[in-house]
Image (cartoon, rainbow, N blue to C red; front, side, top):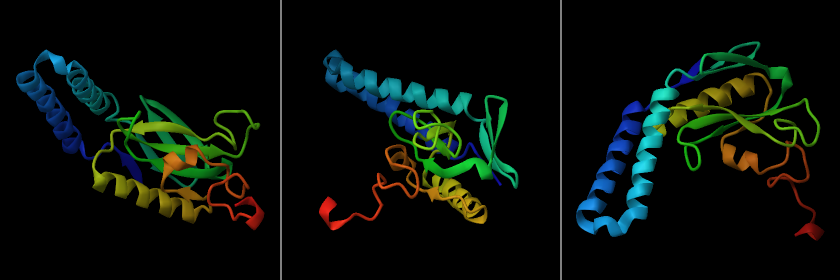
Length: 177
């Protein structure tokens, strides 16, 4: 199953709305609203840039592992080498959504490593339908291959590995509270 660019019209619509907001600030607020104008215009430019440069990127779930294609480069991450997989929805500082991986191999300070997951792909997935589809596909494939899946990837970035006492969802002793 492939996860790739989706919700392109949502991305285009959000860029247009941001440009209209910047234009409205210029029209009604004058140049005194430069911060808001610059922020809205920059967000629109970054959204369009993501739509153009990331539209061919994707993640394919296969039996050997997750195949990540970014700018024409194909990387295979075998299921046996993954400690945890996550999906990060769109939000600051990323305009697109992305796949997060926590590999088994690596030392405590390696990035990516067991203690440090990383976002290996930023995809042009906009809108709730595209995000939901990506999470559903990844969750099903992770369950099939016995790899834990984190639906909230942003939380996974700040968490310890599965089974770690430093994980936010780890059971706590009464003395630790």
